[in-house]
Each structure stands twice: as C-alpha cells, then as structure tokens.
Image 1 (cartoon, rainbow, N blue to C red):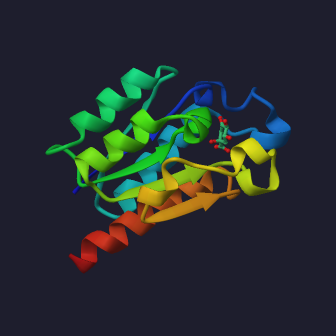
Image 2 (image 1 turned 60 degrees about the horizontal axis):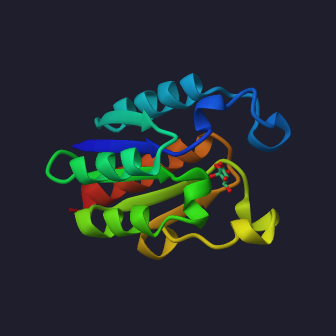
Length: 145
Ligand code: DQA
C-alpha cells in the first residue's frame, strides 16, 4: 500500500518558523518520521511539500490510481482552499488531516477547515507526531479492507 503525505505552504520552514507554535522539529524530521512510520506499517510513503495551491492540487490528482490514502497538512490553505478540498473529494481516497498546532485554541480564522468534512480523522496539536498517528489511522483502515 502507498500513502502520499502532502504538506502546504511554509511547512518547509519548520524548525525556524515560530518555534513557540510549531516546535523545533524541521521539515526533514517530518519526512524522516513519515518514512519511518510507514516502514513500521509496511507502507510505502511519499512525502511532498509545496507553497503553491495548484501544485498541491496536481499532487492530489496524481494520487488517484497511484496511492491508497492521503495524509495532508494543507497549512494556511486549510482555511481558504475550496480547490484542495474539491481535489480530495475528486480522488476519493481516504484522507487524514494533520495540524502540528491545535488550530482550535488559536485565532478564530483557523477554526474552520474546508478539508475536515472530507477527512476520516483530524489530528491537531500533537506536533510532528501527528503524522505518525495519521499514518497509523490509514494503516488500520487498510487492514480492515
Ligand atoms: C498548520 C495550522 C495552520 O493554521 C497554519 O496556517 C499552518 C500550519 C499547523 O500545522 O498547525 O501553516 O496547518
């Protein structure tokens, strides 16, 4: 089974970006953690990041027929992008939404997500471990298939 992990804008700056909010782990740490978590579950994990909404839509579309599930941290696009939510709906794969921070304890504009209505699970506030939990949720679903 294959899992695509999609990361939105500014997540490439993890580690230096507002460490008080997002922690000191880097984007490379996220990539390594995803590969490690996938390997533990016997999953092939691909991780990508883009600052561009269209590139994220392209990556989600390309997952159709090549991946069995998607983990996504859409970052700021969580709160703005109908296009990303539509792409997820279009490919119809199981989706787990991840946020490093607890978006619900932050500004009101972070409380709404266009993606959540289409997600199997939403993990927020667990830091980069959230990606591990998300992969675990997908892996559990695959075993039930
Ligand atoms: C985030 C939360 C978003 O509100 C924010 O725009 C991000 C990161 C998180 O992982 O906590 O860029 O998705």
